[in-house]
Image 1 (cartoon, rainbow, N blue to C red):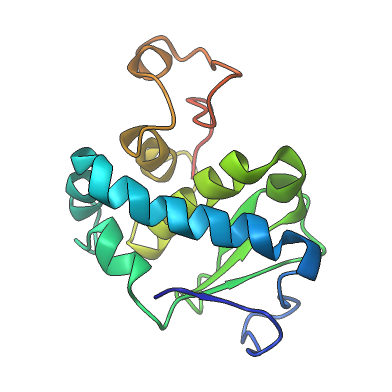
Image 2 (cartoon, rainbow, N blue to C red):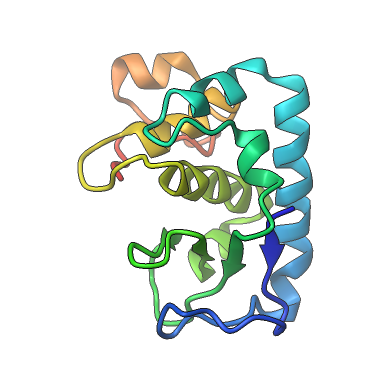
Length: 156
């Protein structure tokens, strides 16, 4: 299973550290609910298999080489290390917005681990939609519904 850095891992990505104790329960909740998504929302695994590395969400969630870290210097939701693609950070902004934002950030970053490009490419954020955390109307209209974690304006 993907690993949460609780101070038992030294990330090779500079500056990434253990997830602070006060946020670990949110991240455990997000990881558990990501597994629930794989069981209850068939489009999640199906969508993930279309990404460049071709792995399902289940494949990623059961991969013990993927580490979830924290980047205390980042003002962003999360990140995936380009030189170390099994290193992911879930950052303060996601935790401050709550567990659904942590879950959406986890799914988004796992899409990057699975080869979804960054920049203006929307495939990582579309993973959030395919995991049941958004509405098709948001994707079609380009208008964000503030009551869902999916945001059609977010690129890579």
